[in-house]
Image 1 (cartoon, helix red, strand yellow):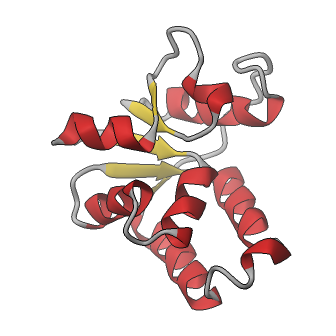
Image 2: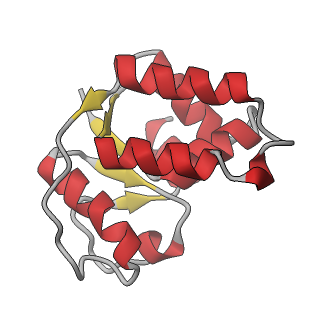
Length: 136
């Protein structure tokens, strides 16, 4: 079974637009189509992002809690990777690539151009649309 890492922006987009591509990716994961890899740092970042006031009116707290609980219970939790600066142009994204490499995932899925425009990344970085198109 394939394994993927989702960038926090994919989770946020899924909650903001329940009919969009990122939500479809979460549905596929819930259906058991692939394993989703997370780490404590990724969970902490996601929780921090989702607690921002700008999301309070758009995302119901119940949905946030359901997502976080589902991730803890059903995703593949791996230890945070060691810091590896310089993997991406954005130091805040380096850990995603390091996590994906450590966990031997097939793809990182992100809407972040710092990641999607990397030259020959390992593992490949796909936008949500690219990921979904490759699975149909």
